[in-house]
Every structure is written in C-alpha cells, then in structure tokens.
Amino acid sequence: MSAETTAARPRSGAHTSSGELEDPRSASETRSPVDQMPPLRRAFPLAVQDLLAMFVGNAAPPLIVATAIGMAAGETTLMVQLAMIVSGVTTLLQTLGAGPIGSRLPVMQGTSFAFLAVAIPIAQEFGIAAVFGGAFIAGFVQVIFGGALHWISRLFPPLVCGVIILIIGIKLMPTAIDYAAGGAPAEADGDYGALFHFGIAALVVAVTVLCNQFGRGFLSVASVLIGLLVGYAVAAAFGMVSLQPVAEADWLFAPTPLHFGLDFTSGAIIAITVIALASSMESIGDLTAVSRTAIGKTPTSRQLSGGVMADGIGTSLGALFGAMPNTTFSQNTGVVVLSGVVSRFVVALAGGILLLAGFVPKFAAFFSTIPYAVLGGAVLVMFSMVASAGIQVIGSEVLNRRAMLIVAVSLGLGIGFSFAPEEVTAAFPPDLGLLLTSGIVPAMLTAVIMNLVLPQRTPAVAEQTR
Image (cartoon, rainbow, N blue to C red):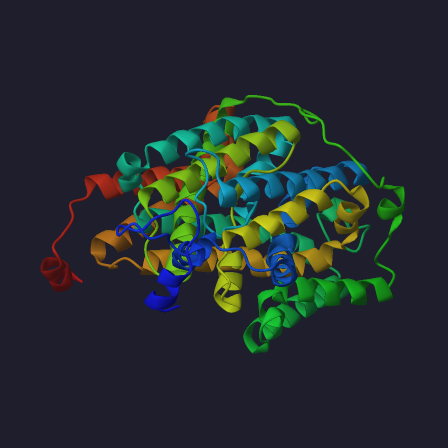
C-alpha cells in the first residue's frame, strides 16, 4: 500500500503526527506475520497439518510407559488421552500466552521422549505415581529456571546440552529394539524376537525414511505417521491387531486430577528434574529456530523465558492429571518452514483441536491397538533422531581436546553406569543407585563440572593443540 493510499483512508480514534487519521489497515500490515491470522478456510487445514506432524510423537511416550509397566488397556488409553489434553492446553498457553508465561511464537507442545530414559525404570521400581511426583516438582524447577534464564543458562552451553541429548537417545534405543522384537520378552506371547516382528518394524523404518527423503510437502513432514499407517495395515492383514480396546472405550470423558496419584521419591525427583533442565535447553533451541524462521531474528529473552516457563507449567499440570512431561516439538519447526505460514494462531488452533480430541476416548484407544513391532519401527527412528540431534548440537562447538575430553568422560560415566545396574545398585543406596544407573544424571553433572573447571583455550592455542 502506498503512502498516498494510507493517508486517504482514515479510521476513527487514531491520529498521525500531523493530526490526520491513520488507515486501519496500516497497523495490520505492519504487524509481525506471527501475530496475523489467516482466513479460517486456510488456517484449519494448516492447523491439521501441524497436528498430524506431532500426533504420533505425542501419543508414543505415554503408550510406551504404560505398556512397559503392564497397564491395562483402559489405563493405557487414559494416559494417551491425558497427553492429548495437556498438550493442547500447553500449546494454547505457549502460543497465546498468559502474562510472562508463553513465548507467543508458533510452537507446538507435546509429551517428551527424553523423559522415557528415567520414567520407565522409575515406574518399574517405584510405580507410576513416583514419575508424576517427580515431574510435578520438576515443572516448578523449570519455571524458576525460565525466570532466571539469563543467569543460569551459562551452565548449559551447547556442548553440555549435546552430551545430555546424545545419551538420552542412546539410553532409549534398547526400548525401541525390544518393541521391534515384539515387546518385552514376557509380553510377546512366546514369539519375542521372531523374524516377522523385525520384518514389520523394518518396513515401518523403510517407509518412514523413503517418505522423509523422497516425499514432498505433507508426505515428507508426516513420514513417521505414514510409516506407522503402512505398518499397521500390514500387521492388521496378518491378524496382529485387535480393536477391542476401541470398542470398549467411551465416547466422551472428563479428566479428574490425581487419577494416578503423586508419590515424591527423592531419586525420581532429582532424575526427572535433570531431564527437565536439559529439555529446557532443547526448547530454547526450538524457539530460536522457529523465531528465526518466522520473523528472521533471534527471539528476545522474554520470549525464551516465557517459553521455558510454559514448558514447566505444562509439565506440572500434566503430572496432576497423569500426563507425561511436556516440551516444545521440534518436528513442527519443519512444518513452519514448509508451509511458510508462521501465524501463532494457526498453531493455537491445532492445540485447540488436540484438546477437543482428547475428550474422545475412542480416538485415544486406537493408539493402544498398535502392535509392538509397528511402534518399535517408528520409535527407533524417533529415538535415533534424538541421538542425532545431540551429535548435531555437540558439533556446533569447536571440538578441540578440551571439548573431546568433556564428551568422552561424560559419555563414559553415563553409559558405563547404565550398563552395570546390578553392580551400581549393590554398591550405593537405592536412590543414589537410581540416579547413577539412569546414565543421564552422571553424564550431565560430569559435563557441567568439567566445563566449569577445565580452562578455556583461545582459538589459536586450541588449533595448535588439536
């Protein structure tokens, strides 16, 4: 719009410096694209695309935890359902904001895979209530961390965060292989490790990779979902799918707080809080990537702080209702880049749809019918991508001898302790043994301490000593 046109079309109540009335459209056109809302006929399909890109990743963590501890089909459905509801609420909080909480960027929220590495052993040892008790406290720690981000973030440079993310991915891979083999040995009806289980898992991996690398548009963005659907169809053709949980589920449901209870165990609180802090740093990376894509600049400290606090509120809220910890979903950054639509209101609409879908148990029950092998193929890709993301973050640092030593010792202790759980738990008190065998806690503490203690070298000296 030209300046002449702008001056010629006044609106009431807004004056220019010369006393003329200002054009109502000029304010709209100068607003950031993040704050603009496309017409609903365009916004709705874009919101559905955002929703589908994260849906499998959001449903998988509660499904994995529930099946790992032998929950009944109805309880498994409930955990998936609660994950949908809490993720929808947290997405609305993240995109629309409430006071200092929320980044007000086009960011989708969902349940985090990162917590599985400690949630599964905690649930198996102390019960699922201990997981939610730890998450409830960890969420408040995240809120404090977000508020004090300017002072605390220096403890978590990319090198430290990369080590934590990498070891999370490594710790999760055995779970993916167990699922690809047909579930835990006791749950696979005598055919654990059968070739047809691995075959279906391999099919899911192959379809996912092919769609991601050679597909275009939505086919690439929703590659994991498509891989799951193909694997599910093949498994159903071989009689591996039972729709009984869907038939037994209700049509409507309203969640009640503390359904699974809260149990505050010191080891669980510390372990989950450590993952929450690492997840906060990953969220900062997601928020930065989205902001640079959406508005072409680094997010403000207020946006980062608000985004991390929204993570924490979602995690504590989820714990009250029985949902796994919440975090930003990096796969939706790809959707923003692909569609070119960066409106936070489109993502908020996706969160609203997810929230409403969570009140329909039959919808959530469908995910409890996914065979282990199909889920195993999907989560193998997802868990491996977590590890790859860790490698990418580590690689963003200059890998001189100092950095290599930090990575080596941190991974050595983290992986070493986790591979010798019996020896560690025999030598240490139960709570401390849980922290050490998690792998993530010793790796993070080692990386943080070594990064603070070992002297930094100038680029010239570092290059000479490489």
